[in-house]
Image (tube, rainbow, N blue to C red; front, side):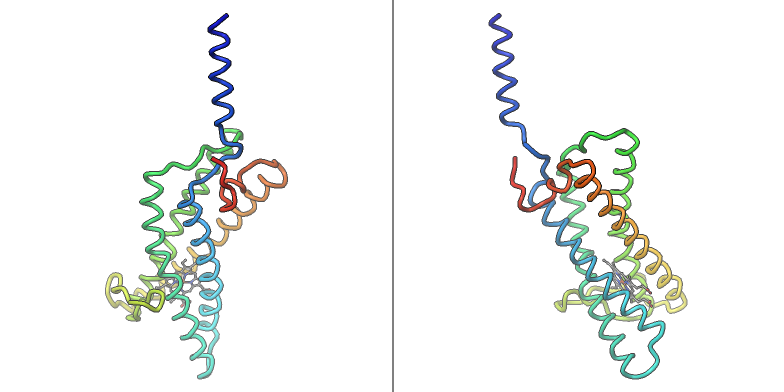
Length: 204
Ligand code: HEM
C-alpha cells in the first residue's frame, strides 16, 4: 500500500516538472532564425544578381550586377562561419525528441534535416569556389575578405556556377518543404512543433 502511494507521488512530481511543450535551447533558436533570415535575403539578392549576369548588357546593368553580386557575397559568406559554429553546437546539443508520428515520417523528417545541413554547407562553399575560380575577391559582411578556395581557374567557373545554381535551387525546394511541414504540424496536427522553435516559448 505504502509503495503504491510512493510511486504515485514520484509520478506526479515528474509530471509537474515535465515541459508543457517541446523546446529548443536558446542558442539553437538563435542559429535557426538568424540563418533563416540571412539565407532568404542572400537567395533573393543572389537570384537578382544571377539574372543580371545572364541578361545584363549595358553599363548601368553591369554596375547593378556588380553591386548585387558584391552585396550577395557580403551577406552570404557570413553563413560559412555560422554553419560551422552551428554544426559544432549541434554535435554537443541534441534537439528535443520528435513528437508522435509514424516511423516512416520520422525517417523522412531526419532526411529533410540532414539535407538542410548538407545544403547550408554546399551552397555557400560552391559560391565561394565559383567566385574564387573566376579570380574575384570574397568579402565578408563588409569587414574583411577570405582567401580564395582552390585558386584561380576560369575553365572551371562555368561548372561551378552551374553547381551553385543547382544547389541554391535545391536549398529553396528543401526550405519550402520544411516550411510546409512546419505549417502542417501547426494547423493540421495542431502539435507543438512550431512553438518549440519560437524565441517566445520559454517553457522548460
Ligand atoms: C546562403 C548562401 C547562398 C545562397 C542561398 C546563394 C544563392 C544564390 C542564388 C539563388 C543565385 C542565383 C543563381 C542563378 O540564378 O544564376 C546565386 C548566384 C551567385 N552566388 Fe550565391 N548563394 C549563397 C552563397 C554564395 C557565396 C558565399 C558566394 C561567394 C562568396 C556566392 C556567389 C555567387 C555568385 C558569384 C553568383 C552569380 C553566379 C552566376 O550566375 O554567374 N554565393 N547565389
